[in-house]
Image 1 (tube, helix red, strand yellow):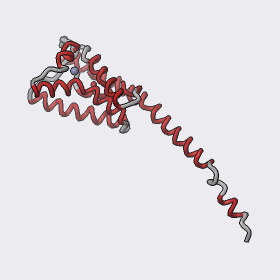
Image 2: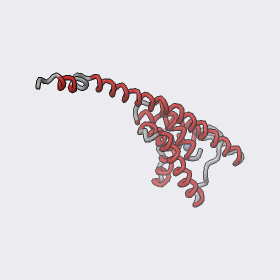
Image 3: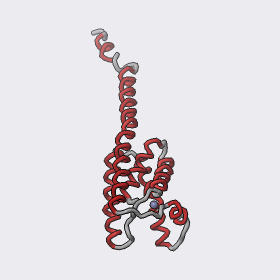
Image 4: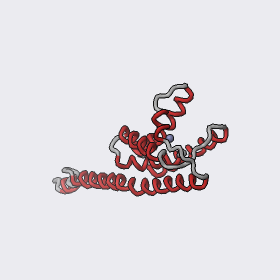
Length: 171
Ligand SMILES: [Zn+2]
């Protein structure tokens, strides 16, 4: 699949991760699963290169906005891109460390451009919705923790007593 569905799906998968390492691993797994879904990719020519840059920019903006800067979710998006990044690096270096495994999992099926666009649009849309929804409890619980901390601080000894003590000062 192209970059945007891979990045958004990786970030959505990482909403259950507890560390950036776990998030990268989950993102990578979502990539391999989605590569099994019939789709088309770009050709590796000038047009394909430009499309890849535009696509990666869109994916980054979508994930950045929906993840609210969460490092774990951004790591998930990176994991979602990782197998394709490794493929590009390995191709440039003329080596084959992971590409053979990636190619084995990748579907050989090439549906019509419309079907491919529909499948990838559906994946990106569903993943964006999941990311919006599943990213929410993390923020809510952070807000809850902050309000609990504020309540504890305001109830801490000394904080409310200072003015009363001052009013009892003999004078
Ligand atoms: Zn791939």
